[in-house]
Image (cartoon, rainbow, N blue to C red):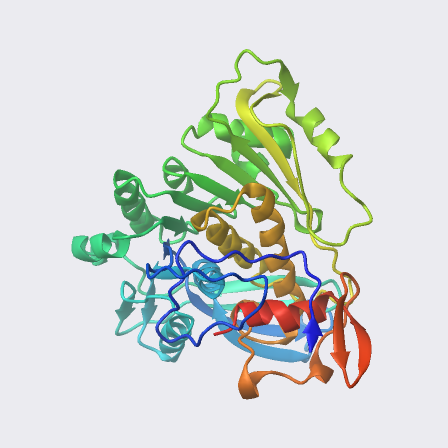
Length: 434
């Protein structure tokens, strides 16, 4: 018997019909189920789905070195493929627009996506050419990764997505997600989604061709740590967030991920605060940082007051609030591989938005999903949100060990202390299993 003491609460989707090929979810007290017969929310993703070859090495090689890998894993990759996999395992019904070739890699990409409940009906398959793939060198010493990507060929052309397929892909969609690959096709999808008033979510990892055009349609943006300043030319990340909301009036919020420092979210308010006293965003952030509980190892969210007039010198001001999300503290010897962790964060934010989760809950939730992926790299599989059940479940002796939040496990009459990694193995993986 296992007693779980957890801060992570996974809300049921707005509608909770299981995916056709899924087994009923494992019964866990914190996951409440709805009796609604309506289908789960649908998210349509347009972007990259590929194969990743991950070679773990003791340390990154020097030029002309010949070294051996410590481990090699082959798994699904691509930002859109990964993010939608996370969304599917959390309870959404994803669809994907992308392209592969009719080769071994392409067939495996399709099968893996389908096995995770992602609708691949709108993917194109070229008879010739190659499917996209990426070589990833995982440095076991620095815990960094180096990616060498080979794009798919032939590329997806906008005219290959017929009006009928585009219309069908968008029918019933609650959200549309773009990783800014396949930008010409993505722009066509974004234009039609905007016309239908479907919210648009942009993953702004870095400056890419077509990004500026897509951002003009964005409802929500999540970006990497370096992107806001690179895109705006602002003096700091907080100032850049104000600039982004001023330059992109349709955006409801922008989140910047900051790795082990967590994330920062600037949310626009619909209530006019133009008469209120202005508060400088950098001073506001400093006040939030002072409220962080340095002794806590689990993700939290610190928020400013709502409907503030938030300003940035030389940029302007917006009505809104600032939210600071802290990251789960992962001991260095536990951090195995961050590949796919950022995409898992995106998938969790998609889930939060589609299920009406308030930002105060969504940010810690997404951070916890992110950290679980980084810790569970040893359980290979796309995103490491591994399906554990029956004969697939590794024995307890193969679980990683960890510091952090404790759960209690009764085994053989003795109560053992278990840790963050065990918690995720026993609970989080089951929540995501089928």
